[in-house]
Image (tube, rainbow, N blue to C red; front, side):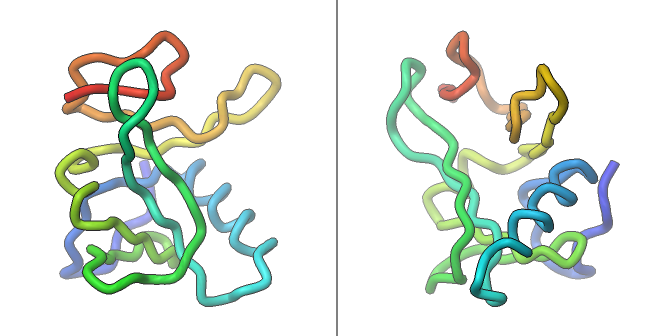
Length: 117
C-alpha cells in the first residue's frame, strides 16, 4: 500500500502511495526544504473534530516519523485521535484530495470534513 516507514520509528499514521506522491509534489513547491507534513486535529465541524494538514517544521514535543522520505509531525494532543489513520489522496475529476480513513471515528459528517470519537 505504501512505502515502508523509517525502521524503529513510531508510526501512528500510514500514508498511501498516492498520498506520498502528492505530499512530495507539494513539498517540492515550497521554498523551505526543511519542511515536513504536519497532521493534527482541532475542534470544529458538525461532528466535533476536524483534520488539520499543513507543511511546517518540527516543533518541540512532536511525535516524528518518516515515511517514503517525508518527515511527518504530530502534536501530542492529536496522536490520540490519529492513531491508526490512513491518509490517502484521491485525484481525477471526481477526486476529493486528501482523505483520512480513521478506524476510531464513530461518526462523520456528510461532507467528510469532521468526525467524532
